[in-house]
Image (cartoon, rainbow, N blue to C red; front, side, top):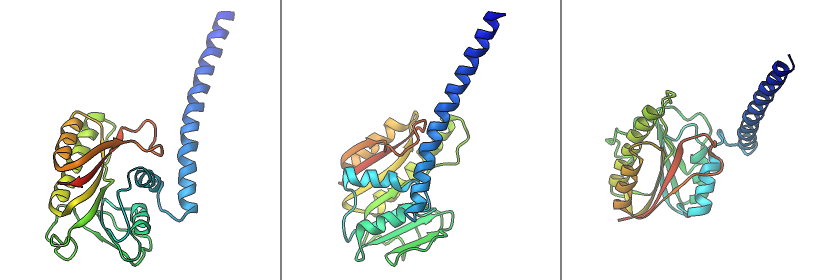
Length: 217
């Protein structure tokens, strides 16, 4: 009887510890979500880009920036501040942007594969920076999610090849999987510098990581 009670107490302790860890992670996510709302950003993803910018300085004043998968708009707002009033930020997403955007930001609801919109994707001018925070709808299967993430990254890299100016910078989110090393090698072949970075604001259990490529060849 005593052994049974001891086992039950042990199980309860494990459950409580598990709940505590989960609660701690949720509290961290909630903290960033509340902070984003307090600072008038629609999503906590703002802090990922902020960390990237602080560490790698991918954007500067007067840059023209393209944000792929820009909804709900946090990256648009942050990028707009970095490039200033004489810079320009363009965003594209399958979902509409429902927040008010500053004067130096333009966003459209469209597929990134539709490159026929010459007024939006001006190949003659090009972009100084291309950002991609695109992510697939997750299935719970890590291999499937990683493959879908790779396909989106491949699209983003194609856009970068076609519309990024020489010496331009490229930031791309990817889920770590079997295709990660191959994709990283392809990016390295097109840029002078290429590093990987996982912001502290990413959820700890997430497989997402960012490729930071600077100086398009």
